[in-house]
Length: 222
Image: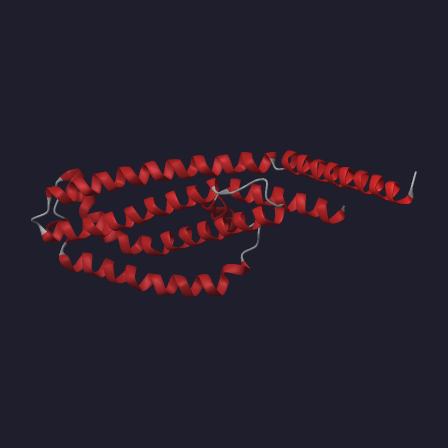
C-alpha cells in the first residue's frame, strides 16, 4: 500500500471516528436533557394556567367596563385593571413562545443561557407584581365591590379612605424597590423568603437549570 493510500484510509477512519464521537455526544446529551424537557413541560403547564386565569380576568373586567362605560369613577379603575391583566396575558404568551423556541439540539451552554434569561424574566415579573399589588388594591376594591355586591365603594368607604390607600400603595413601590435592591442577595437559600421566591418563579424552571448545571459539570470533567 502506498503512503498516500494509507494516509487517505487513515483520514477516512478519522472522519468516521469523529462522526461517531459526535453522534455519541449528541445521544448522551439528549438522554441527559430528559429531566430538563420534563421540567420545562411543567413550566409550560403553569404558564397555560396563568394565561387562562388572566384571560378570564380580561373578559370579566372588560364586561364590567362596558356595563359602566358612562360612569367614570367605575370605568377608570376597570381600565387600569384591564391594562394590567392584558400585560400579564401578553407576557405569558411571550414566555411560552420563548420556551417553544428552545432547540434541544443546541449546545448545553446555549440552552442554559436561554433558560437563565427566562428565569430572570420570571423573577422580574414576580417582583413587579408584588410591588404593584398595593397600588392595584384600590381599583380592585372599587371594581370588586361594585361587580360582586353592587356596593359603591366611594359611598361606603369614603373618598378619603380610598385616596389614603392609593397614596400608601404609591409610597410602597419606591420603598419596595429600595429594599429589593439592597437586600435581594442577602436572603439565605434556605430562608422562607427565598423559598417563596423559588415557588413564585417556578421550581420546575430551577430544576431544569440544576439539570443543565449537572450536564455542564459532566462535560467539563470529561
